Length: 413
Image 1 (cartoon, rainbow, N blue to C red):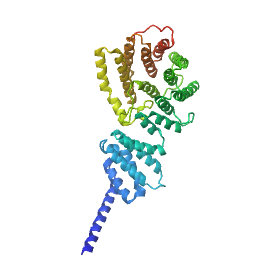
Image 2: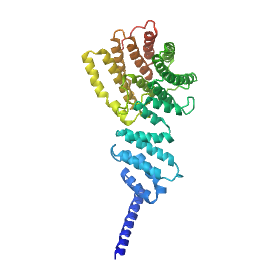
Image 3: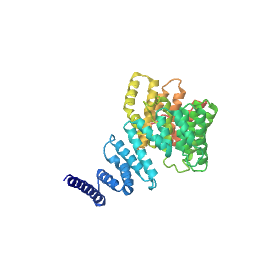
């Protein structure tokens, strides 16, 4: 009797499995549109009975549709399931390695999004062993581990290689600079300036991109005490702005404002507190949606209301130096926020840069502060293709920093 009952129980279990498999197949073959959850459950069932055929599809659904399957707190578990499923794929399965990398990338970002940085960093380290190292370098930068990030770039990047982008060189130079290795940073960024100069000469790059890089290079040279080279870089940028003011861009611009806003944000790094593993900051030098972790991006832009209140308090207290600093920090955030979200209406940002200049003019005997505010506005005006005004601002910058009589101040309306 006992034997018969056991066989009956096993038969029921097998029938239940067959029913689940049948329902899953019917659901996937049906003409109706499945929800993400229904599709996922179907592939979960079928991956157990036919892993060779359905595990790859289960990984794909988990990676690409987990965003629709609940709030951010639930996503790490789903992406962890994707990683586990990808590891189960046969070694000879097509695209196995890429499927695993996609699952790991999604898992890592989901962990950072909910503040689980230590776990996210472990995933980054695994990815760095088999995929581009960039995310790990940026995560280290976020935590203030600039020397380690710079070393990672140095081991992996060869300047001049066809697959090394401008972005990578900007990031590497930024980390070398933050690690105190200024001369090495100048060499890397100077190489980028040279390469851009050649591309501009051949009409393969916009003049404006060279202006922004030369301006940033001049700032780096100034910080390193190379005043003659600094002045030369600044005057070269001024000459390019004069060309733009006279005839516009000779080459197609394309979408190049990301370069302006990334370098603008990088110039604001000295005014920010030092990053630590416990209090991470964005990896300045990287474009926000090309490498910033979700938690640092959210915290950085989430600080805008507090900075706005600080600006109001400083204005009321009459602390002009503090106001100038806080206003610039706020300006960087506003520019990044608008650029990275596609809000490119110059009318919203022009008054912010104008106010920065107006505040700096009120500071007595502070030509460096005024030059910074004018530079900020000049580079922004070049980004929005108001080249004559950009040139006029930069003429005054050169006069302030390199000697000579500045041009008359024009009141903007």
